[in-house]
Length: 442
Image 1 (cartoon, one colour):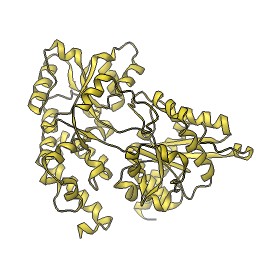
Image 2 (cartoon, one colour):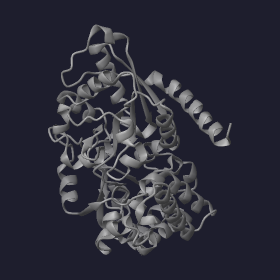
Image 3 (cartoon, one colour):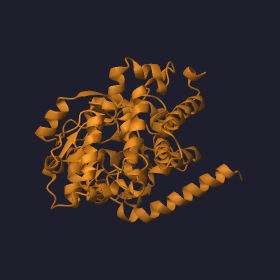
């Protein structure tokens, strides 16, 4: 048996163990778009595989699944894997024919084919009634060759610095609009005894946000950039602002702006750091403030405002129309029941429950459900220049997201230089393109 196969089998076993432990907090059920369940379905159990960040931490999907079980008798067994393992593990399971009945995967117009091979492994959902109710902007992220293969719920993502307005006010600070101002703000906050920025390095994905969420700025400064990158006419080193941001991240870490123990920080602990005012800023979506309130009800979240990440002097907001989608395994044993579950999740009342039950979500990608942006937030967002984030518009970025996180961690520890980080990202793009036999990388 090859070493690679041994490693893959080991990974599957480890993930199965994690899934079985977490399944206890994750069975939930609720109905569909009017497909009647038969009494024989009462013995059916749908398996649902996902990575940790693929399901809301509030457990709302599991709660809906329990409602679904009460209505139909169909149980949903959630099998949750660590974020860092899921992408590779899912590929192994799909290739071996052992994928769950339903699985969650990150989706965008570029990677739905390479990451999931939707046309090969997934049920075509194009004719489902709920498809017509989805926001048209997300359809490309769940489609391949004009066929819809997944259902999705989160609305467009936009990441900001959530900051403590009271701390800023006490120190006489204004919202920074460029990197030098940002650095000055961080230094004054640090001097006051508060950690300027909480960074969840342990999660791997979070520290990558400044690099690629700033894609709107890159496009503004470099016309037709995404098209040129996708045709391999230019490479990432043609974007000096990208290297600048990597350098700035390293500088802020060296200056102590992340605090002493930031390499052991996790995103989950950010709420406590902000609520107890141990840290002043954290990169998140605007509705993340509701998660802080849910966990720390005595904290006044009106203290928290938002501003654009000013890395590289950025003042545009990156918009990500995609998030993750739920797919039905074409080789699964319970396709009809899985479709029924999707119908149930797409009911108007359950979409509202999904938004209400996920405090960190500002909107769902179903226009019939009103967003919960405040007037102040909406006015600020409306005032900003916008553009598509890099990982959605440029090939072979999203696939290596977690690897980039490891590179940045290595940079923080001194094992890599900022220039080596950029080279590593470029090398992986080339390697991935060649694996995919991309004609632009001949």
